[in-house]
Length: 81
Image (cartoon, rainbow, N blue to C red; front, side, top):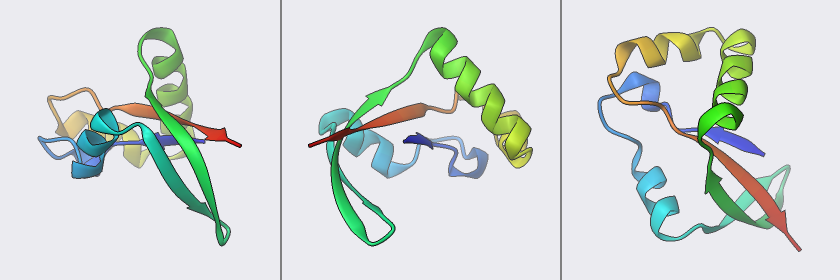
């Protein structure tokens, strides 16, 4: 799973992003199920490719980035069994 810390283009990252940095072991609710996962903030070409794809699928994400001076984080959530 991939999540994006847009906060609609706000100047600051969303609070949950700071929590993930401190505690990357997370629980995610998907379709009524609770899953354990490890959050990893993506950088470089991996981040950029996923961000570009998201902007193609959801053009408002490009607007969020245009509103903000910060680089919007892209986070991978890898399921742990």
